[in-house]
Length: 74
Image (cartoon, rainbow, N blue to C red; front, top):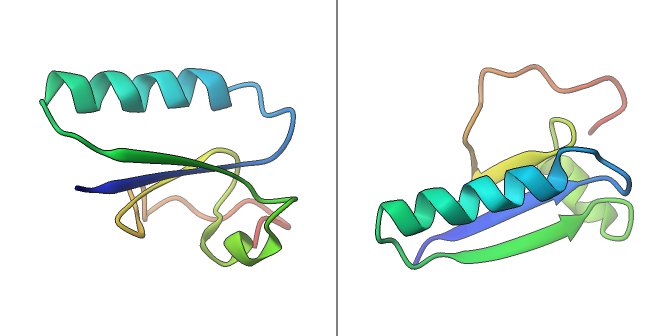
């Protein structure tokens, strides 16, 4: 089962929509996936893989690796 991590900062306006989109895509593809939502302020160790809010990782790999990290994100 793939693990989808949704890394975000508190107050990010797109976190809810991104979570819904990930759930929708997994359902459309008939994939059982574990969705883990991570507040990077509460879990600073997650910032190592954080390009900006929100960041989506599938099995630890960024789905948009070409995106430059936001200033201060990592």
